[in-house]
Length: 554
Ligand code: GLN
Image (cartoon, rainbow, N blue to C red; front, side, top):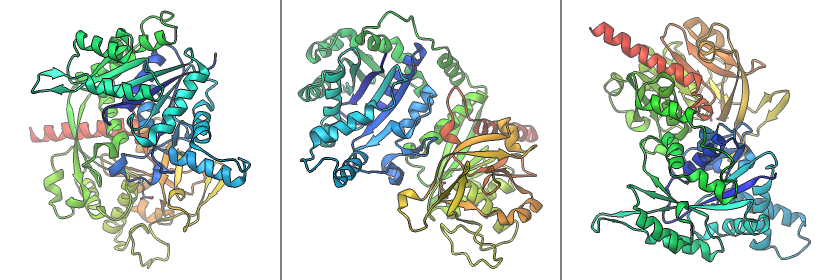
């Protein structure tokens, strides 16, 4: 049987959680025993989501195969455990870029190149590619129905419905049913309008997922069903929940997965989905045995989505240790003038996440000094690792001008080059990868999964329970290994290296309860049902530090 396609669109307003809804449906179909793959189609014109500002667009999610994608792919991975690929995300910009290359090459033989059929054909090609192994392919269309830029995508999925037929295509539409306080009523009109808009494009949704902050009375669901031409049982309420990991269960209770199968005419083949692993997660979230507070000192601390995978990975570590983890977001830029001890004395651990550019560097360095001197568990991710090395060089080795070429200036009195500098070539397996220093901004990074060898007896080996790991990267600069001996003498060791020994991947501090910096992004691989070992060990260390402090005080 070829794959079936489920298209998920959104209406009324943005930010209704289409990504989470898609990811949850994926998890539910998986729990029914099916193979699923999730894809995201983004209508914006950027060719490369990697160069988009996290303040506007949230974090950049990196796949194993080195694609920089939308953060929704992170939700897909966390909910289904299926690793996303480059071919699971596309933007209008990428479609046009392909189209224009083809046109320049003469592929269209001088014919008129148009949105329909040429753009829509490329969109359909993207949706259908590499789907032979899947039972269900869920495609989320970014944006909101009614947006001008989303039209070619909607036209393409309409055509697919026509071409593949009802047995292989269905449409889920996510809307909002707002509560109007003055009238004390939930309002269905925006949903009716949104479906009308979708139908004017030729798409009749099979299932409506209605977000609401309270129970939608049956009478209102009936009204929606009647006016939107949808079966009553297929009007599903999606109520607000405490934890995002509750969503699959709540959707299933509302019959979402059953209605999807019914739309395809395969309703009763499988019984209730096996949701035991979700139950286990929820029970650990809801019954914490203690709590810890972690300070995250970064640049985009006001914007939750900018560190999405990071905050999820911390929650997963809480699940692993059955602890409630509170995060104190500390703005590194504002922090420079503040009293460091005042902000960090009562936290149980400190984390400096990935980052780019000079702004906030001094605040991050101050936080690292504080963690090092006060025995606070520290996890430095990517920039947070590079800065930990710089902090150590400046304050312990006495190399006062230690810096990264990213924010220099560096005088290189030692003649060993900058402490953190640009690499123009490195190995990926047996292949030499090269970068030009003056290349396009979007194409200069070490991206995707790389192997790493971990030193025996190290803290990192203890955390991973393994000596060989593979983690995802996204950075331009590397730590210079020429200073290795000096570091080791004073107690900072490179405990993880790339297989050829060329690139430092992990550093850790001896004579400190728990201090690790990693050049990669472990948060990208953490899952609620497979918490990342480094985060789990970090939160465990935070809790241990807290308990021993309590004992001391008593
Ligand atoms: N700015 C640093 C680099 O490019 C770190 C990047 C990151 O933290 N992701 O190497």
